[in-house]
Each structure stands twice: as structure tokens, then as C-alpha cells.
Length: 173
Image (cartoon, rainbow, N blue to C red; front, side):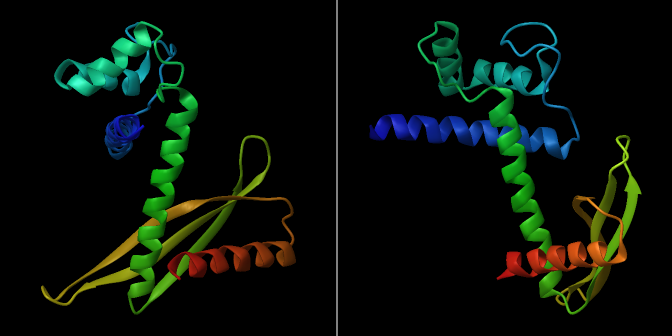
């Protein structure tokens, strides 16, 4: 049981690293096909395949998948989306913690209707990052997300803004 747990931990570490690299490069994960070793199967599966050339563990994992020895393989679109969500949450938390550690920060909000005519409010956090050792200052601005608005009344927007600010404060503590 311990070996199997370690096996899956190592597989997930590799998959998380691949999702992270693709995200950092602003590259799409999926293609038009979701099958290993087939054309147009996307950047994620293509990187998994290339990693398997040099990594014995990933090579063994793909061999087991190809031979149908594994039902669960963690290469599908659902795990990709889940890993993107987890990494996004970790990044958002780090941004908010950094902003809260600075003396001043501000929240920038804007709204616009999307293609389905739902008002989307953007939340951006801006702060002055101070590096006291280097005596340097820089203004940082980070997009935190979209919030769909069910109503566009001032009261509802204010309520939504307060909820978002409470979430930002909660993330830090």
C-alpha cells in the first residue's frame, strides 16, 4: 500500500509540474483529441508522452494505461481542470498574502457584460511592493478573477464587493 501511495504521489507531482509549465507559458492543455499517442491530443498529453521518454516512472505509467492495467490514470480533462483550479487558488492566495503584507493596497473593480449578456465584474488588486534590502519599490497589479453579477443594482454590487473583500481578508488569516 505504501508503494502504491508513493507511486501516485510521484505521478501527481509530475502532472502538476506539467500543468504549471503550460500555465506559465499561457499554453492550452487540451487538443481536439484526448487519446495518448494520437494526433492533436494537446500540449498536456504531448508533454506527458515526451516526459515518458526520459522518465522511467512516467514510461511505466503510460505502459500500464496502454495495456489497460489501470482504470484511473489522472490524465483526463477533469484532473487537468482540477489541477488548474488548485494551482490558481494557490497563486491567488500568495498574491493576496503579499498584498496584505504591504503597507498599502487597493482593489480595482470593473464590470462588463459577457457574450451571454451576464454582467461580469473583474477584481484586480494593486499594491506597492517594497524590497527594503535593495531599497526598491515597484507597483504590482494582479487579476484575481471574474465575478458574475445576478443584478446590476448598486446595492447588489456593493454586497458582492463586500463579499469579495471578506474573502480576500479570510485568505490571509
